[in-house]
Length: 421
Ligand SMILES: *Cc1c(COP(=O)(O)O)cnc(C)c1O
Image (cartoon, rainbow, N blue to C red):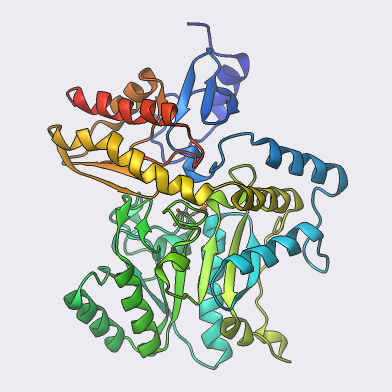
């Protein structure tokens, strides 16, 4: 095998990798090129991508339409600050996102990462009440939930399933409860809401699929219960669609398919089709109205330096073109069938707890945590990039992946899990 490139050997000692114990982590794979659903490594190997770069590259990598849009924008206006200035790409994108979202979710605040979009949502909800003269400190959030890695978003995530349990007791205490999956769960939730009434600003949930917490699914009925509880106790309902948005669950947005209307929605991940960082927090009219005032203190005091970056907005507009022109959402539905077929044989393997699929998300959950390094290495040997975490082995490929590449991915999962762990 050829030696790694010079930039790898000289730069790696200066890099701090994500979610990694640097001492024991596998050395990262040097990537020289991406194309469609393939990742090309420096040593000439080519991997079929099962993760779509943390669920962002929904049209596959280097899509010519997005590439062209970014190049055109680069020549004209790569970036201007959004304070006091606006540009066509951001305004077009805001209008298009609002048209795709239900009802009066109609004001878009742009940010540069998902965590920041959730921070903005939490800040909006807290100040919504402040502007009405109420101090409400807490959020209701859910077991299995994940909303980001910054301090405030960690505090509304389930610290047990995340990589953050050592932070327990150090963060503001919110109310982390089980999802109300049935009438009993609904009663438990109502008790918590009653006990803390007047101190709760809102409810934060990943609708239909809790992603980084273990690819856990729930039914639309759960979301209806949350909407009813939010209405009964006068709370804001925040849907974090950073993972579920843009077709991943088999609908453009989980909130639209569930028919449940949140007060605030966060978007990121596949927003730019996996090309540039961008996020959005979208608020309903009643949320925006609480900030609309002659009092300067009632303004939303937030403004990420790179918010509404023009290149990123151009990429997002091009990505939305593709959703309009091509049958992306139908492709996600087709992937549901193919993933189900491909992964079903894993049910019979020892140590597999269950196999579940929703939209373009295929999950094999194991009984016990495997040696992740060994598993990840075996996937690469099988020609696939798959990144299991905890007890979860999952596939979230590009929505455009062909049947052959998908079969290679599901075949790799079956092959790797068949070997002794
Ligand atoms: C990834 C993710 C985030 C955080 O987004 P970043 O861009 O990594 O900060 C928040 N919420 C959900 C549901 C996510 O999947």
